[in-house]
Image (tube, rainbow, N blue to C red; front, side, top):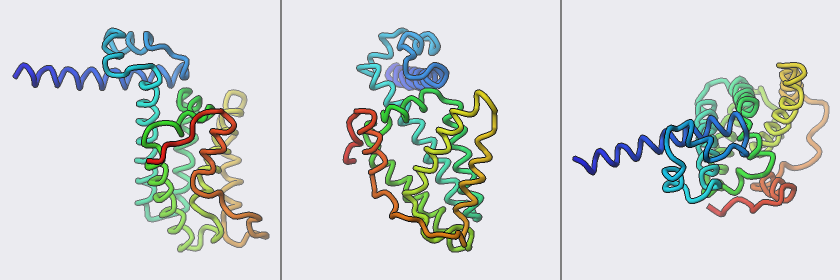
Length: 219
């Protein structure tokens, strides 16, 4: 019984740590300290370091949690019957997450998310789910046929960057550019897309080159 209580306490502490870390990093970015996290979680820093050997390990756990939340958003969108509406909701959710979470923005801007253990597998799953959304909208005649699933993360990044720039000056203005993007994705555009979509992990490698961080793991 005592061992079960200890295990339950350990799980509870881990949940408190991850919740507190998520909140601290969201508010202050990745510069938030382990002491900040410990204070919010109501535990000592030693308790955190027993779970996570370094601050980087804690950051990786929080980023992984955010990516898993994104997977749930994408999965819900992939199950929706209306492909184009689902794509719009997905883009809105991704931008809203980045506006509300400075730590996630830092991780994207610094290419940090691509170095999280297991990221490559999760990325491939996300691309597969996005492909389901794209295919459904194309089958319904709502989306241009030359759009690929790999195009969508690039569009997400473009919109999120515009939103981060505009939001402090004119809140909500980024939604105009969401409309522009979606209108350009409709069938019957005047011109076909000029190039093939980026392949596989090219977007992650581009981030890694710009930010000088290790690329995503192989799985």
